Structure formats: C-alpha cells, structure tokens
Length: 431
Image (tube, rainbow, N blue to C red):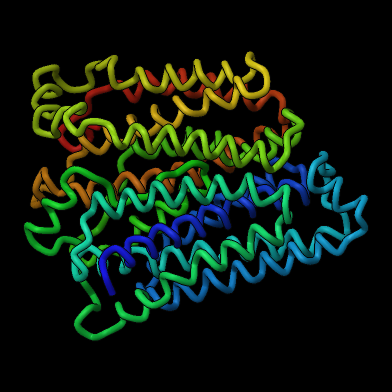
C-alpha cells in the first residue's frame, strides 16, 4: 500500500474516532442532564489506556466497529421515538434524572464508549509503530493526519446532526473507519509484529519535531490521544508526571461537561457543540503548524531551570493557564459567535502548554533527552490519568452545587494552577 493512501486511512480513522466520541457525548447529554453521569463518559473512554492490554490492531479496529454499530443502533432507536420526544431530546434540555425509557439506551451508550476506548488502546499504538517503523511514514505527516482527521470529525459532528441526527453521524463514522482495516490486517504479518517503540535513529529523528498523539479537543477526544500513545511500551514503562497530571485534570474537568454546558446553559444544539470543538481543534492545528524553533529545546530548558534552582517560579510557564482562564471567562461575556471564536485561541494555548511540558520532561536516566516519543507518551498517559480524575471531580461538584457554578470554579482552577505549573522542579520534574 502506498504511503499516501496509508496516511489518508490513518487520518480517516482519527476523524471517525473524534466523530464517534463527540457524537456519543452529545447523545448521552440528551439522555440525562446529570453532570455525574455525563462525566462518566470520558472516564470510560480513557480508563482503558491505563490497563495492561494486549496490542492487537485488528482486534482493536473490530472493537471500534462493534462500538460504533451499537451507537448507531441507539441512534436508530431514538430516531424511531415519538417525534416530539425525539426533538426535545435533540435540541432541548434533558431531564436531570434518567427516565425509565432512557435507562437501557444510556447504559448501552456508556458500554459502547468503553468498547471504543478498549479498541483504541488495543489497536492504535501498534498501528502507529507499523506506519512509522515499517511503512516509513514520517511522524510529522502522521501527526498532521491526526490533527486534520480530528478536526474533520468535529466539523462533521456539527454538520451531520441537523441533516440526519445521530443515525447519520454514526453511519458516517463507520464509513470513515473502514479504510484503516487493510493496514490493520497487513500489520499482523509476522515480520511486522512487536515493533519497538524506538526503531533506531531514523524513527527518533523523524519524531524529533512532532508528537505521537492526536489533538484532544475534549476529554472524550483526549482519550483518543491517550489510547493511541499511552499503551504498553516494550522498551520500558511510561512514568507519570505530576505537571502533566495536573494539566489533564484541568482539561478533563472542562471538557467532560462541555456538552451539558452547551445544551443546558447555552441552550445550544449539536451544531453549536461541534463548532466549539472545531474551533478548539483548529486552534491546536494552527499552533502545531507554527515554527518549530518557537519553543526552547529540552537541554536549554533544563539548563535554565538548573540555574534558577529547584522549585523557583518561571512565570512564562504559567502564562498559558492564566490566558486560558481569561478566555474561558470571556466565553460567558460574549454572546453567540463571539464566545465560539474564543475557543480558537484556547486550542492554541492548549497546544502550546502541551509542547512546553513535553519539551521540559526528563525521562528515565538511561533514555536520551531527544527521546521525544517517550516524552509524548508520558504526557498522554499522565494527562489521561488527570483527565479521568478531573472529569469525575467536576461532575461530582456540579452534581452537588449545580451546573451554573461549575464554570466559575473551572475558571478559578485554571488561574490557580498557573502557580504550581510555573515551578521549576528537580531533575525529573522540570516540566
């Protein structure tokens, strides 16, 4: 198979994942308005990345297909409901409690998300290794496909719902997932199995200026990146970093309840929700396309932190989080499309904070400072743990105090986190 076709197939699969998970998040928010139950969705999608599961690309793809088919069946069931009920579920406010008729669809939707997360965890990392290590696709090209695919998936989330509701969303997600199946079959050949995380200087140099993970526009979409990059590492374990965990808590708590915020507080539709994700993803994409030299190299940052001494403040590191707090608050001050536009710089700031954390991560003592894939895996795994905790924390808080109070608390959390994330730690924790 030609590299161009494989790159397109990879991007198509990322579009399918973001479309499936974002559409599932909107579907669940229509079945129940309970913040705690809604916060379970990113938890179920992300938790699989924390389990020691086997790496089987074909099995992973089949699990994703099964999960999408299950979500499609739920969409068909909702479509066949009484028109008034279906319309209220699609555009209006869902009831705070789960009605008797929604218990089974809700349980099946959560199960489908869990299966989809398992499929990502089992299949995406070996597929990445196969595409980069065997097919010779550059990491920059693979990452561009991931970013563009995720952006396309979120745009389709917005555009397809007004036309055909969840049925069209999940059926299109199925179509987008199919092109990667031949690559999954090809990677099962004996000579292509158990590829190491680092396959010599070529892979390391190809990865030196890019990332292993796709963009994370929501905590749900973040699970795509976590599952893709935080899998089993045959060459060594992937450690956790507390700064990456803290950042994961911030974004997990924010995006875990985003569908409810759009639906309940903003009175928006799935189109609005999808456009918010698209603006955020576009911001990440534009930031990732910026000049590679805009961030200092890891050795330079390590030396700077060493001169500053342990646990000294580096205000520039905390600035993105203060700006995120300001822009998040601004979404409540500006009406309509004005608040939507603010998610564009939010995506850029999130990508900048990711890059700075990765640039300053120190890995195991026997690893080179240029082992960027391992640092991105550390970010992905640590952020996944944090996102899991943050989503549950904000969901429980909103359940107790009410959804309107959750957003001001989120703004305060971003502002407060700027202080610990500005610290220059000791040798292992300079991020």
